[in-house]
Image (cartoon, rainbow, N blue to C red; front, side, top):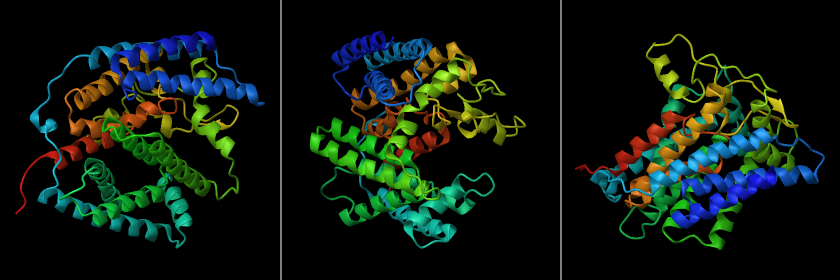
Length: 401
């Protein structure tokens, strides 16, 4: 079945690139990353003692998703959709944005001091470990002041990516570098590998569309990303004195595939208590805040549904949420909804040459690249909305005297 799966994906990749001529087209990314992850897993289990073969049902379901995604994506991205002028205007380094950058920088400095105070440690590695421990704790969690300061992080990322290629008459280079390192330190202290992956993917996408990406830059960016991720994983595992790179690669890049395979073959019982509780958890959170519902649904990525494949994992690819909520129909819904959203953004970004949507697409293209692992666009939809609103704030023109 792997041979047929590979052949179909190769044909999809060929025709998708022939139509789009872009490596960052949503359909091309989707077919490529699923092929790469499945092929890596297929050859990995043949070279090791780990032998959990993927079922034919797994290949069929993934193909149904990719085909649905590809047809929807190509159909949308081939058409021209007009945008309002606000989304077509260029980002400007004006008094308003200089003021926002200053405020953002001060808030990030405050956030870092709050993390150091919260961690009660002087060693940077201990700070990362303690902050991470508090962040995932159901009893403690972050204070209200830290949660407020964290809003500066997506705003700082937008400033960095919006003005990275400005060379003259812009934000002072030293100020820009300070903002970058403050954001990097904040992300490291929170020990979020997702943020590191997001930054890497966004940088590479913006360099690609600006025709500035080359092999040397790709290697340099990936090496920095790998170093930061290994550093975070080393800190996370410091309490157990266990740090195995091969195990890390398997757990984070391969284990979701056999985990999803067990899910669709009814080897796991992951019953949710509300319709669409996983797929549209953001709506339930909104309903709960306005007291429209009495309790929150059991969400997959917050539940304790672990399985051993053979290493323990609780991630089941981006397909799991819709499949748990709606069964096989959910695979088609997932492919259609995801392709529609990302293809519209892609169309607005490249066909309308909107820098606004280029940055927005760049910030969330990692969701496409790592869909074989998990899903963040809907899972953290409030942050997605915040990012969009912050982009509007940076892009909109009003004067500060």
